[in-house]
Structures are given as C-alpha cells and as structure tokens.
Picture 1: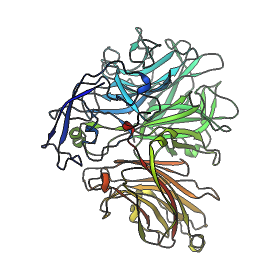
Picture 2: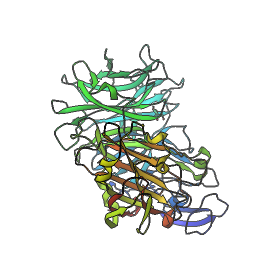
Picture 3: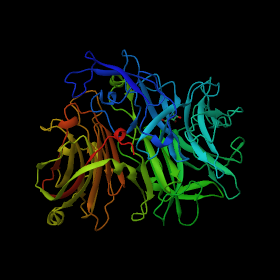
Picture 4: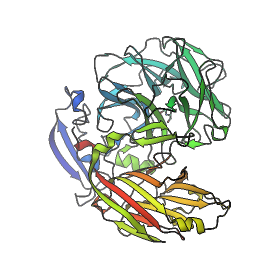
Length: 600
Ligand code: DQQ
C-alpha cells in the first residue's frame, strides 16, 4: 500500500512530460511503503519496498518517450538532480512457486556501469513486474568489486542453486555459490552466500580477469552436474566445462565445450537443448536423438550475442556446430540491433525456453544521468528450433504480451505504389503490436535482371537507398512530416543467377532529431522459403522497437529517442521505396496497454 503525500513540478528540469505543457519533472512523495504484498498481486505495487520518494506511477512518463511495457527500473527519478540507477545483464531467471523471478546486474547509484549488485523482480506472467529488495550486495572479499552475472539451477528436489561471478578485492574473477534463505518464501527475498566461497578460482592458463558468468547446470548420465564458464586464451574465445556433484567441489574437464579463434572473451555463455520434433522447449538436461544443442556467447570485443546450432557429445563434453561456416562469433546473431548478455531459462510451468536480453541505451551517458535511469530488458522471447530451415532458432515474444493488446485496426491488401508512402489511420503510434504481411509483384520479380552487387543493411543508405525490389515496409515512430521515422523493412536482392535473397533491416538514421544518439542501420539476411509470404511483427513501445521477421528467424531491437514522434504525435506509415515493384500489404495493428495498469 502507498499513499501519495504530495507532488510538485520542477520546471527547471531538462526533460518534458507531455500533458504538463512545459518541460519539467513531476516529483511525488509517497508514504507507507513495503509490507506484506503477496505474490498474486504482482504488478499492483511494483515499487514495493523502495525508498520513500520513488513514487513512480506518474514519473515513469517523466522523460521523453519512456517505454511503458518493457521491464526497466521504475525508480526513474531525479530527486534534487542526484539519484539515478541502471540495470544490465539478466541473471538467474527461474520459475518458483507460482512466480517468475528475474535478477539483473544493477547499479543502484548511477545510470552508468559500476557498484554492481543483484536487483530482483518477480512476476506472475513475465510482463507485469514488481521490484523486490536487492537480492545480493557486494559485501564479501570474494565479490566486493561486484556481484556479477550468474545463473540458477532448480534441482529435482526443489532446491535452488545460484552460481555467480564475484570480482574479488583484487579484481580476480571467481565463482560463488548462493541459495535462498527460505525455500518456503515464494518471493525468494533473502539470499545466503555459501560460507566456503569462492567455489571456483581461475584455472591455470586463464587470466584472472577472464573467467566469468557460470551457466545453469545440466545433469550427466552418471548423475553429476556440469556447468560451463566463458573465457579466452589469447584471442580464442572458449567455454570451460566443470563437473560437480554438490555445487561445492568441481572438476575441470579436459575438453572445452567449444572454442572459436579470433572471437575474444566469451561472456554470458548459454548452452541448452532444442527439440527437432516437439513444439515445446526443453529442460536444460534433456538430451537424446531428437535434440540439438545451441551455444551462445556474448562477445566482449563487439558486444554482440552470437549463437550456433550443433550437436553435443555428452561423453566427451564437446559440442560441434552443424555448419562450421556459421560457428559462434561469425554466423547467426540473436538480434541484429541492441541486445546483449542474454540468458535463457526453462519455464517448467509452460514447458518453454524463454530468452531474456539486455537492451542498453544508445544515447549519451550524460542523457542517461539526466533522465535518471538506463537500460531495459527486452520482452522475453520463446525459443524453438526452426524445423523448416533446420539451421536456426525462432524467437517470438512470449504469448503473455498479447494480454496487453487493446483495440485493433485491420488493413487488407493495401496497394503501395512504387516510391510511395501510405499513412495508416491508427489512433496512436507509440504503443503497438503490429503484424504485417507483404507481397511483391510476381511479374516484377521475374522481369528484373539480377546482378551480383552485394547488399548489406548496415553498409547501405538505409530506407532511402532504392533498389529494384526494395526497400519496403513500415515507418514506425514517425511524426506527421516524417522528419523523424524508424523504418523497419525488407529488401530483396536478385542475384545474377536469378536467386532471391531477402534482407530484414531497421534504419535509425532519422529516428531522432537529437544528435547524440546512435543512428546505425541494422539488419541481416532472413531465410524465406518457397511459398512463404514476407511477414514481420513489430512491438513499438515509445522508444524501443523490437522487430521479428519470418516468425522470428531474424530479430532487430532498436533503442531510439524520438523527440517529435512521441505519444499522440507518433504515427505509422507503409512505405515502398522499390523502383520496380508495387507492394501489397495486409496488417493487423493493436494498441497496447501499459504493463502497469493491468492488475490481472
Ligand atoms: N556483465 C557482468 C559480467 C558479464 C558482463 C558484469 C556482460 O559478469 O561478463 O556486470 O555484460
């Protein structure tokens, strides 16, 4: 329960809140926080047990285009211009006694990296969240320089084991063990660090600063557990494997899970099975003939999450990619935009594997400090093996996000002529779930002569660069004059051999009139199989655009900072900048509710 004791507007602030009619901060004080909030009302009192001034219900709109259904820190408040905080890597996600738990790298003292502790939030549905008290702080010699990334393992008897990296008093990276103080508490509020920590120190040959981010454990046929930990040797990224019976004593296996020369330090390695046969996700220990295994590494050098699909040999402990040409670090990416330090977990309630990823800010640090918070978590995604291509995974927003859908608009078979823009009449374009299908003129596809000119989203002129068969797609977060716009689009390239290659891209070059923000053009090729229509789904949440092509074969997350295309002024357009083909588009577009106003 909380009571608002009073609010005031700080007109001198630097950011605006539409509706207030002037630039400024809205400050509120609340009283009577904390107490006995039960897990079944998660979402009602999200800021449970925070400091008395962090009343958020109105303040989350206190900076430009602040997202409303993505998980971030709700204490987006500057009190006397001094307070700020940021979240980063998702840590230890798990489902326990009816609630989802997400821990995260958290700096309570600033909107930039540093002073890392473990924040903790719970949810009944992975969409509505309540922040709980900090789970672990840096209070022992073995983690005094930071409680870094780690993972949870739920044992068959219901115990929860948390392994995390600590940065010691001498900045050595070690692995530590923690467990819930009270397993009968569904909130898992209190955590105990094992008295014998650290349980692992860097092995010989590994630099003391290159040993971090233990994974969820998987069981072996001999009844032991294995974990993998990222590292590097010279420029080769590697994943060490340890075996344990009790999570206290470990043996380093001779073989590495995997190693890829030239990829540098592997952070936040993830390793999990996907089913070749079933439509559900698999628990981390599942293996067998119908199973493939995914290895993901977050490359410290480039801050990109790469994955590859392959085969795991439990007896040697070694994983081999199916196609060495698309090995970890130079093949497939989870996301071609802003998405890092990701981690999956197996959701035993809904038998699915769920992916979390950290979306960093791409504006200036100064701007983050001013707005008082930084970074978000992407909408969780389910992961399935793509049985049709047999070579990639499919990522799709968890179905619970659809609970936020409000009224929808449908547009059927709209024709978009060569070089044209069509306005879509939706009430507001700032919180949307968009499903769109596109058809290219068949006659044009055949008529066009192919060329061997290479196309690459990031090296192109973006949505403004015209080709015979693209770009075409949507302009999201656009203002009425199109001075600000974020195009999400397909581009089809026809090769000299007549084969078609489809690209899926996002162009941030005109997403904001602000000058100190990232304006990259992102994207990649996306497989389109014979007979398939071009399809995209886009989640728009004020300043985040998460886009999924062909059922999640390719994904792009953009963190954008519109200054004009905000709230009621954000619009949506179709565009076709191809020179030789008209496009036919069919769309269904839902307005999305804010996560915090749904108390179901
Ligand atoms: N963030 C953590 C590390 C991890 C990195 C420190 C990845 O454990 O390797 O905050 O973003």
